[in-house]
Length: 555
Image (tube, rainbow, N blue to C red; front, side):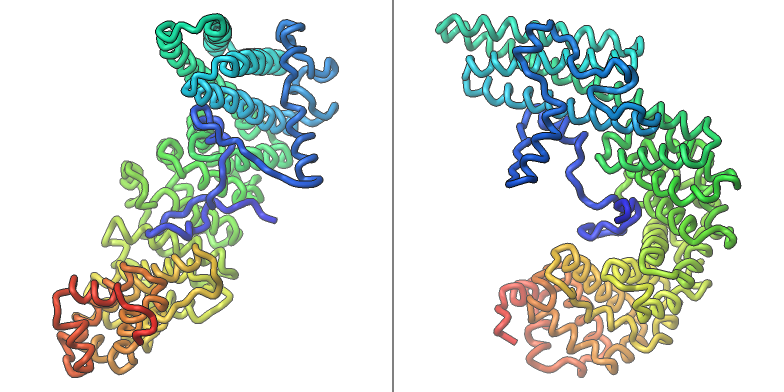
């Protein structure tokens, strides 16, 4: 099973951003479960036992830790470079990966205890507040000592560790004082003080974990930068890619440590051509955050992408991953557009290479990545639309929709119809669409093939954008006449009157009403009197309210 693709289209998105499929990132749990205890996992049978055995490695018996003054009890003396229990004799990249996973899991244990403490403090359950403080204190000390023994604490981390340990001890002492009094005024004042200390502990812990993760990530990046062994570099890249799946916060750390620079350096060396696809997939994942895009811009990453895309001798997989990076950095979701300045300089070459990749794609994933990149590019510059028309893009894309090998999901059709909708603002696009014999209208008939909610949402977007494109193109009388002859009106009416046909989507309804009214303006006889009375004559909002309240049995 392949790693989730950084460039796979987000099925639930209303535009063309490509992101990693939704997961429950471990680092996000660490960050946010501090105040909200979200660690509730229920398993049965051997699954429960297996999970318990796995977690047991990362838990510590509080009483033992108190007796041993928080000395680490799980470090193998023969393996000083490993955290807690790792297989003896593991290779360097396995050690780094295990260290990262162990660090994340142990951090989750601590954050869970802190989350419980917040909850119990709010309820005034002082006995449990103190017990939780003791456990959290022991877990933090254990984690700090074990990490220090495994890696050696960097100087810049030591002050954070010291402050964190002092705060944890203070938390333990102050909660113990609350056990020996019933004075409500005293407890209320202590509650505020404990809450403040607990917040400081949470913040300090998060900072320390970020620095520890950054330290481990630096080791992986160093392997990418300094090793000549393809196997070592590939493993390091795999570990970085795996970490990007834990959410944008970890991606930010990875970007700040210079991973994008190191990966693009790999993509500029012919001797590592077999690693291009892997490295670019990781770059696409990292560029889901602004820090990643900033790093890419600093090293002329756009030019590197253009070189790979335009090199037909380069493997299709590498060009597809380069397209994924382009789709990511041009996503409308990004607030910063500084990187687009250098992108415009290479736009002609990139757009040309992407449309060729759409035409020659050997599978649906390659087409999806290339078309998603084109869809995003057409949003921010009209020059891209003009280039696409010159390259006969309408014909290439609509013909691809007939090819199940290339366009096999509504997500790919969503990208195609997005491009067409953006092209339709240009007058010369009308004649291009006319030559395709109503292929656009087939997109109006898109229906989900399963009950998958994300697929249903993709079909809604296809219907909506197809209707929008038709409405724009129908300002040309020839297009309007051709659409009527190809039975566009009955389908639009069906989408308006039948909520099930449009998956109860209001946006599809509005787009279809607008398209109908545009067609009726040029050819009023094409609409039956009863339909004209309900869908054309009233104000748009009245027709919308009428159709949105219809039962399916109305038709």
